[in-house]
Image (tube, rainbow, N blue to C red):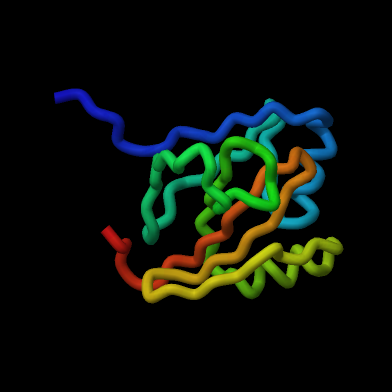
Amino acid sequence: MAKVVGLGGVFIKAPDVEAWRAWYHRVLGVSFEEFGAAIFKHPAVGCTNLSPFAADTAYFEPSAQPFMINLIVDDIDGVLALAAKAGEEPVGRQDEDYGRFAWLVDPAGVKVELWQPLGPSPV
């Protein structure tokens, strides 16, 4: 039976595409291909989620955008140190049995959830 097997990408409208790419490169160390996209091979840990939230959720705050991006990282403290060096501070942090989390807001106002998986996936 045919089925969806993962998330193939996140596509975002940004008021200033070059500034958006520059922020992700400067703050999170993301490199972009010549055609404009960043390509990530699926890591050996973590999982990809496609999950709806109630329209009145506060989970995406302080962003007013109707979506959030989750990025798997291998060293959340290292990524946050890179972000701090670029002048960005997380809007929150949280540790769970299955991973460590932190949140930033990108120049398009999108909340970016950083997830360092710890051990096997929670599901």
